[in-house]
Image (cartoon, rainbow, N blue to C red):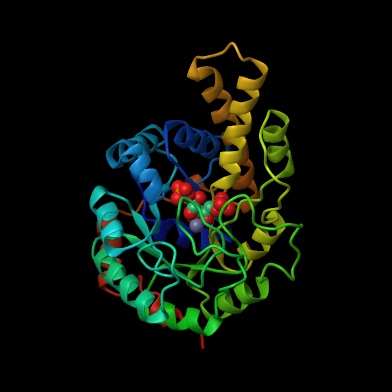
Length: 348
Ligand code: G3H
Ligand code: 13P
Ligand code: ZN
């Protein structure tokens, strides 16, 4: 199957009442781990690259690695997504490369650190929507600000400093016409999200539910959704690592989100932990090893295991064969003739 529009993939997920994991990639092994898991569980999938990933791997390497994944797995719908675009130019360059979806994260200014005003966010996101939709490309926006800092991106602080205001979410969706909307409900990027297991009073699931009620057809996105499992932390620490005790987002909370309009769930940290633990274990227990394949193979396997587990937990497993790809040109027509507009779908 050629790469598919993320809009198509999320519309199908909404029909089926499941969520789709969006997994970050920087290299071949991570892409192979995701595809191994997608094949194993028969899942559609979103492969996403941050700005940091694009510069680490170089655009064309990463792009062609993801194309190879599509070529080798024609039965799996794959959306290629720019994660946390910081400007119109970043999103434009991804679209011109051939990404089928972009996130314009206008919740922060272009520096990726300073919270932006509502008006600034609307203006830059709308500009990306106009450019992207004319080319059949999906747009995810963000309203509210996540906690933490990853790769220099993030406002810092806890996830509860800029929780999304439902009224603003509705206004933002109407003014921009985004296909998917990332909301801030108390999660943060990275491993250090919570210092105790979060319960309903920490994660603002009530805000998520309120937004979904008013924007029933806008696909909600949960960022910072790694669960940071204790067993993955333990492997790292057992083999010389120094992670402090920490908690992530419980899978049950994500599943509650999925029952209330969450269609895209971003996971990066869990895969980083899995790969690093596997690599540490080889280097610690077999210090004579020096062939990268001796540690990259277990790392890839460890990541595949986590991704397959998430695909099952999010409900996307078993859905790869539900539909055929609609061409990006057809999707562009749908935006032009209004049939893919989300605007009339806002419930008052
Ligand atoms: O947004 C956060 C993702 O985990 C990507 O992280 O910017 O370090 O590649 P990164
Ligand atoms: P985690 O750090 O929780 O994996 O979040 C990843 C993310 O939101 C990428 O955009
Ligand atoms: Zn994110």
